[in-house]
Structure formats: C-alpha cells, structure tokens
Image (tube, rainbow, N blue to C red; front, side, top):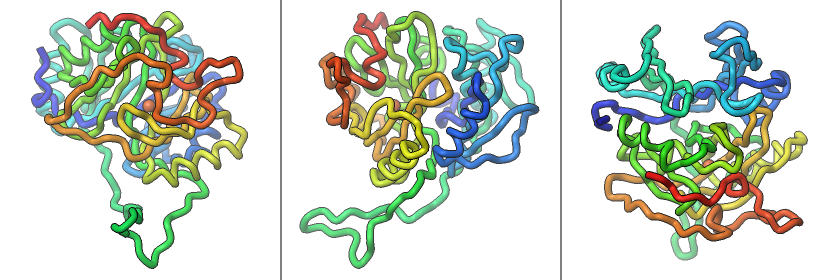
Length: 324
Ligand SMILES: [Fe+2]
C-alpha cells in the first residue's frame, strides 16, 4: 500500500495534449495567457504558466502511443506529477514495479495507471513567483486604501490547479490513486465523482474523477489558478472575444469555493480559469455532497441551456453509485 509521505507528491507538473488541429491548439494556449517556450521534445510545442507548470502540445498520431490521446481524437496523452526528491521517485518505483512496467529516463519515471492513462513522475520544477496579492475592501475592514483594484486585459495563469477525468466508475478509478499512491479524498459529489488531492496539505484537489456519461476514460477539463476573480472575468472576456465558446461560467463552485469560467478547447475537453480555491490540511473534513441539480455551483451565469439541461461538467456526468 502506498504511503503518501514517502512519495512526496506535490501536484501536476505537466500535461501533454495530442490534438487533431495543431494550429487551433497553439492559438488557444496563447489566447489563454500561457507563454510558449523552447520545446524539449521533437515536433512538440511547450507552454508554461507563471510558476513553470507545463503544457505540451503535439499533433495527434495514432501510429505513436506517446501521441495518441486517451478517449477522444484530441485529448490528453500524459500526466506528469511532481515529487519533492529523488527518494520519492525511488519509493514510487518500488511500489509501482510490483505489478506494472515502469521505466526511468532522465530522472523521469513512467508507467500507466489502472485506466491506461500514461503517468510520469519527476522532481518538481514548479516555482511560485511572488506578486502583489489583490487586497479587498470589506465593510469596516478596508485592506486596499488609495489604490485601485487590478484590471486584466488577458489572463496570465499562475499554475495548473487540477485535472478532471471522465471514467466509467469514479469509485473504482480512484482506487489506484488512493491505495497505491496515497491520494486523499477531499470531497465527493454523492453518486457523481470524487475529488482527490495528492498531498495532505495544499490544494483542495489535484484530480477529479467523475462518472462519465460516455463510456470509457477521457479528458474532461484542466483548471489553472489565476490571481483573483477579476482575472477570471478579465481573462474569460478576452478568450470570449477571440471567438472561443464558453463551456460553463462565470460562476462559483460549491465544492472548493472557486470562482470559475470554463471554455471549450481544441484539446477534447474544457480549460478552466479558477480563483480562490480552498486550501486544506489534515484537519479538512471530507464531505459527501448530496446529488442535486445545482451541486456543480453556488451560482453560474447561463447554467441552464434553453432545453432546461445544465451546462458544465455535471452535464457530462451520470448518476451511478461510486463503487469504492
Ligand atoms: Fe474544475
């Protein structure tokens, strides 16, 4: 059984997407506010968020397993997790080599999870860059005096927050992560999905597994942290003005408290701007949220489509008992 503190996982370092339309993928990543840097792989494009979180984009190629997305013709093809030290990588090798193929090349451990998702583990490279945190003037307790609040013409995503994956049964899908890698259940959406974090302290969730309406395993969405709600809105308005379509939002999640705005992307799922997500410790009490229509958000503009159905990830999930 995996012991979380031995593995020293820190969060998602890098996601690799393989896309049918490379030009659209690159345009979207630029519009999103990521910065393109020199690629470290051949025929590949590399983008970074402010803290060095990486997005790799390649043209989908079904003749190459490393460029074949899971589930859709465009989608993710590898998830890289950060590890604090090489002792953590060694502990992972000892755990994972017991029942699956593992490889180590240039310090990167690679294997597959039980769903067939390509995983990589490497020494964490992300590094938060300090910035002036937006202050808010609450009644009677002003924190921003003689200073205008920031405005954002375009987002500059600070870091990758979390990944959401649609699966046949979320309760089963999480077992590899909880039992083998020591992930912790932060919260559950009753019969819809499970929010997991890879470390005891920190982000409310690094990965969300949900019962997908469509059979199989596929990328659902990837969330990036931005500095504040103003950047969610400013960044979202910029994306909207470039002609990209809203998937859901702007709105505010009930679970994890984040303000969000999701857009449809060329990557086979959505990308999400998120601000002010919950940060937790071992004292966090996991809750099983009842399944109800608006569980997805406290509020969302335009959540209901004209046919009465709901937009957003919840619309792509199905109610089914979580077989954990
Ligand atoms: Fe999300």
